[in-house]
Image (cartoon, rainbow, N blue to C red; front, top):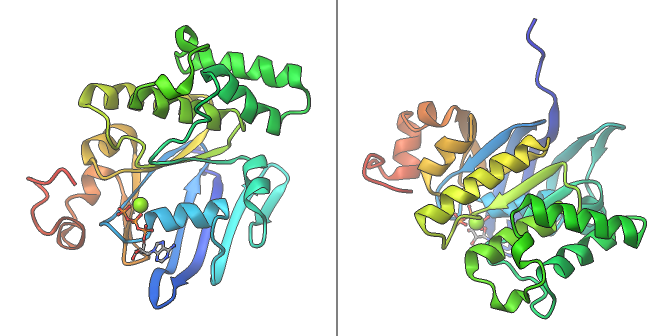
Length: 252
Ligand SMILES: Nc1ncnc2c1ncn2[C@@H]1O[C@H](COP(=O)(O)OP(=O)(O)OP(=O)(O)O)[C@@H](O)[C@H]1O
Ligand SMILES: [Mg+2]
């Protein structure tokens, strides 16, 4: 008998307004353990706000965000950002901001130190990660000198140092060439194979299709539909709302 997928995160009727702007408006969806879930939708529909609510940058006005841990369900309301990172909620930023004066290895080590009991253990973890992301040959280079794709790779490496269970990637491919994008997609697959669940926010649909077997589509702060990327892209409501009716020609 097929095993029922286990939830890792649950958003239940979540609301968040900024002044008069209803950024998140009764949003509900689940993320399952081990998947790469795509989160898509038109500009301003609330994708980044969703990540900011899950990671605790913002607090929802109403509704629940529930994290399923091995010790049971945890309602994240009122839990600070640092605690959420500690219990495995990681994210990258569209514009990576490494500690420029430090080397690649030192950057990863610094983050690892915050989340590990001993400096020795943190160093071991940093060395393992630098190799995992393929940056061993530049481990001692200062970050200020790194090109954008390497900075993005380092951003991924730094978040791995918190030992995430759920990793949220908000437009992590932006600014990359097609070849660099391919490398990034391979890296994300590799990270997922480590057992890390991924929430993948991206406008480039070819990338979403390559990576995700399920996508959630948002519209105006709420859940619109979900399914396999290829199936979802055929739905009239998605074509109409998300792609302006011209999705065959749109690299959204
Ligand atoms: N800190 C804020 N203050 C005021 N309004 C905000 C804030 N953050 C987001 N918003 C508004 O909330 C809505 C959702 O924004 P959000 O950035 O979550 O959308 P998005 O789906 O990530 O868009 P994009 O695809 O362009 O990145 C938008 O109308 C945005 O202007
Ligand atoms: Mg965004």
